[in-house]
Image 1 (cartoon, helix red, strand yellow):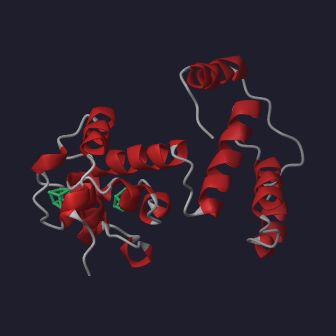
Image 2 (cartoon, rainbow, N blue to C red; image 1 turned 180 degrees about the vertical axis):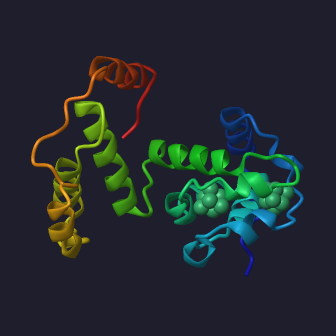
Image 3 (cartoon, rainbow, N blue to C red; image 1 turned 30 degrees about the vertical axis):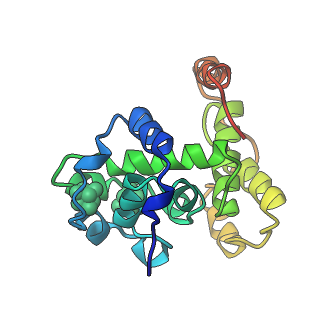
Length: 186
Ligand code: SF4
Ligand code: SF4
């Protein structure tokens, strides 16, 4: 399978990923260590080392439209294993942000979940699980997701009906405000 087209290299894309991640992309020599340790390779369309290669060769569309950048669990295993000290997990993060900015969300449910989580933290200073679940279900249409877990979570008091009131909510709100002013993207 040919996964990149050298003739279509987008050098501005390579430079942007480098600038935003502060990583030297060209030092990746495709050893595959990151892929070997990635727990989500089975679900990716491109393995994490393939994503690195796609970035090196400026394949902006292939990277930003990939499922992999949304399915990445940010576990840091790739970063830990890279012999060239490349923060590969950070590069996956950067690509996910860039995909958002470009209007791509190949795994929409993942984006909706992340948005619902952040909305909850923004409102209450921490996640309010029931509110988060409700927003996620309403926005994603996945109303029966993990619904079988609800009774045991309720019995263990893991799904309170009211949000917790934490100290320092205003400080958390300021973090979100700073981010919004800095240029948030849907
Ligand atoms: S951070 Fe993402 S890409 Fe890296 S090993 Fe974990 S799941 Fe895979
Ligand atoms: S472990 Fe590092 S050098 Fe090896 S393929 Fe992954 S990013 Fe490249």
